[in-house]
Image (cartoon, rainbow, N blue to C red; front, side, top):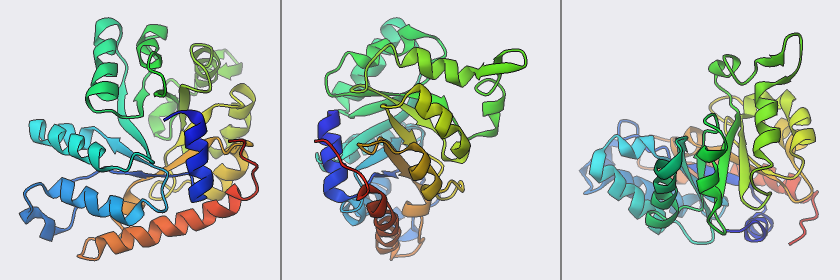
Amino acid sequence: MDRNKLKQEILSRQSYLITGLDTDLTKIPRHLLSEADPAFSFNKAIIDATAEYSVGYKINTAFYEVNGARGWETMAKTIDYIPKTHFTIADAKRGDIGNTADHYAKAFFETLAFDSITVAPYMGRDSVQPFLQYPGKWAIVLGLTSNSGAADFELQQLNEGGNPALYEHVLKTVSLWGTTENLMFVIGATQAEAFVRIRKIIPDHFLLVPGVGAQGGSLKDISEKAMTGDCGILVNVSRAVIYASSGKDFATAAETVAKEYQTEMKGYVQRLTLNV
């Protein structure tokens, strides 16, 4: 999905919600465990319930890889089931180089046909470049994450007693490897105060923002600090939507929460003029 198509979907749905399909067999409703493929049955119901309010879906591949070949089959079926109008993200955080990176790109862009994949940049340009060779596909590069371990490397100052932090150098450098048409960056919602600085470094790139919902990030703060004239952000919510209920009403509960997010987002989108 190219940038213009993504902007069209944001405008059409008045939403920039990405629903995260972090499907954990220990957390899905018990009555689904008798299904032939419980995770896929869960995903189908969630997609049906939330598609009207979401512009895309993020699949955290670890929740599928843990189940071996069957998990990969579930992931493939889920990608096929997601409407082609919706943006798809493989949250795989790949970060290797050379032929290995080439094969990761082929696996997620050709074999599984995701629109995008999350990528770790710390092995340098050749760990990202293979994912930038596919028209209409996106590398979503880790920038500033929400976890406490971000302080170990990402937030470290490159110069003693001064700026920039390592993550700022990463954003500036990586942004030169691709374009606003094939590069996005992951910026955690709990780092809200950093968005002002980040937008000075990468004013036009789309940002994938996890951490709203269960992790406590504020949709209002993020939207006010990070949105651009053509939206420029995709906000991922996983647990707060898909596990809104553990009962037989799980899909209805997910729909209710997704609609609540979309309703708030609609107010922010309506302030924009999207050039599509």
